[in-house]
Image (cartoon, rainbow over all chains, first blue to last red; front, side, top):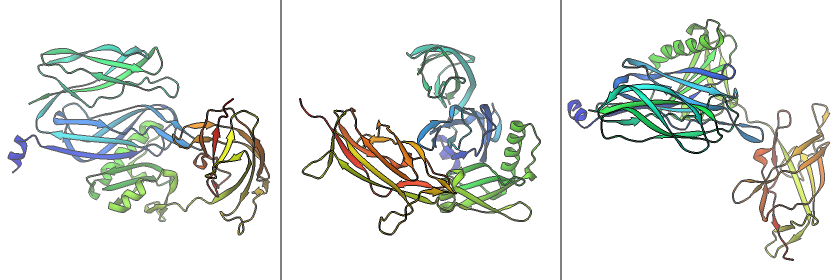
Length: 192
Length: 221
């Protein structure tokens, strides 16, 4: 039965919510999610869903985190999912996470790129991969949101799929205000 | 679903909550505490070991109900050694009620209160803070903690259809009483006073005794 499931591309998914309780001040901070089961990170995709950055402060909603990333270690069996967040306000927040373990992929590369001077109109940014890949699919894309900007800044990136061998990927980025640096956590896997 | 709530033994502060849709084995709680201790050590610069932490693991409906609460709305009970023995919803926040009486403007055939947005037409707003939702059975609240309830409030009027703020007039509350004349030139819409945006007064959540709605209208010249 297990063999049959494997040929179908079995997915095992762990998901949950994290409530940090308190952050140690503001700025970049790291928190660790202990997974219910260890995963092989060369077969696993980490995702954040509803980052739930907002929190309620008396009469209005305010923004607590500008940026949240989640990552598993490279090519290791691990029961830890690491979160990195840029904290603006030490507020009560939730972060929704998911780890999807699949039998039909090989994770080629996990990385984090600094994309300079993202503007308020969509621009192309190129990330050079450490490892060229034959076929490319992408997942676990973090939002490229600047880390040290005023509240209210948000942004996003799209990465275009490629059909042939590549050693670069292009992401299309946009931010709400001009001239900000952005961090992009990316994950590249090949389908087996 | 399982949830694990982690507290500091020494301060009894909540330091992190984790929920797992697919469950989290009780045997792995010690591993989770090690990870939380490592995070705290990295953040504070002071060594925190897993033994300094205590966890409460909840399952199914209890986990779901507790995890849905903001941390400030949960309380934990500890034994003599600092171990958390239970986590529960905090007692409901005590409430004060604002009783509002509107007069002036004009009334539509369907009894909707109209206010022209010409900056001249006015609604007389008389509001009073009371300790209950029923006027007949509640008492006026003029002081809290021996101090007059006197402050300027920014009252957020929202568009009743979109929920977007339509106007935010500043009003003076003196000893729990507001008496103002409201005039406006904002765009026509149905507006509602949104008590979910009210500031708390001391430990009290402030709510409206009854909904407050009226329609901003424009007169054709």
